[in-house]
Image (cartoon, rainbow, N blue to C red; front, side):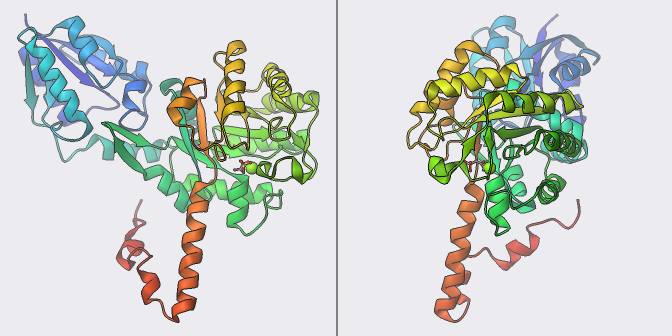
Length: 432
Ligand code: SPV
Ligand code: MG
C-alpha cells in the first residue's frame, strides 16, 4: 500500500478539501497533518475551532489512517519523518506566501522518489472568505474574549493596535502585509484612554466617563471580530472596578489593564512632572484581587500596569510591585516607560522572567519606538501595544487639509490629499 500525506487547517471542510481527500484515498493510505494554531497565525487569522477539535474532525474522515500535528507552514518536519509516496494538495498554491512551501515540498519528495499530486480546488469557495463570514457570526462575546489567550499561546508576540472608533477598528481588522513570505496582521485592539478622549476633544484625565468608554467599545465591537484590551486608567475605586470588570466581560473584552496610580488622572507620558501619584502596593494588589473575585468567566484577564519607571521610583520598586500584583492574582503585567531607549524595560523584563517564566508581559513602546517586535519577544514580552498611532496619523492629515482649503479658498488642491469620492462611498459595504 502506498502512503499519502495531506496537510489541512481543517477549520471546516468544503468541496475543495473533499477533492483533495478523495484523490489521496485513491492513491493510498492517508496521514493527515493538522496545522497547529502556531502555524496558521503566520499566514492567516486564528481558526475558529481549537487544534483538538480540528484534529478530531479529520480523524473521523473515511480513508484517513492517522492524524499528526504540522507545527509550521513548512511540510519538511513531517515529510522527512514519514517519507510518503505522495503529497496531495489543491492547485491553488502556485503564488503568494504558499509558493515557497510548494517548492520545498517538491525538492523534499525528490529525495525518496515521491510525487506531488495537485487537484482542482473549489476556487469559488475561498476558505478565507467563508471563514471571515463565519467568524463574524462567531464573534460572540465569549468566543472573542477567549481568542486573546489562544493567541498568547500560539504566537511569540501578540501585536495590538489602538482603536478609538468603528473605522479605526476596521483598519485594524483588515490591515495586512506580506513580509518575507509571512502574512502580518494586527491581532487585536487597544481601547486607549488617551485616544478615546482625544478623539472626543477631551483631555486624558478621566473626563470621558466609563459609560462613554463602554459606548465606544461597543461601536468598535459591532464592526470587528478581533480581541480587545481595554485601558481602564486606575480602575477607579475598588468597588466601582468590580462593576467595570463585569461590564467589560459582558461586552466580550478579553483583558482590562489598570495602572497603579491614585488621585487626579494624568497621562503617563507626562512623567513625574504632572503630580501623578502611585498607589500603595497593598491597596492596588487588593483592587486586583477584588476584581478577580468579581469576574465571572475563566478567560477574562486583569493585567496590572506598573508606573514605577514613569514616576522615577526605580527598578527594584517595579519588581517588588510586579511580584505583589502577580501574587494578588493579576493575569499579566504591563511595564510602562517614557524613556527614549528600551534599556529599563528590557532590564525589568529579563528579571521578571526569572521569577515568572509564564506570566504574560505587556509593553507600550511609544517613546522607545526603535525596539522591534522580535527583540521584545526575545526578552520575554508577550504583547506589544501600539497605543496611539491611528489617531496620531489622522490628526495631522486632517489638519493639513483644513489649512489647505483655507489657504486656497477652494478644495481642488486639498482633494489631492484625500481619498476619492468613489472610494469613500464604497468603503463600507452596505450589507453585512
Ligand atoms: C493610553 O493609550 O491611554 C495609555 C498608554 O494609557 S499611555 O498613553 O502611554 O499612557
Ligand atoms: Mg491611558
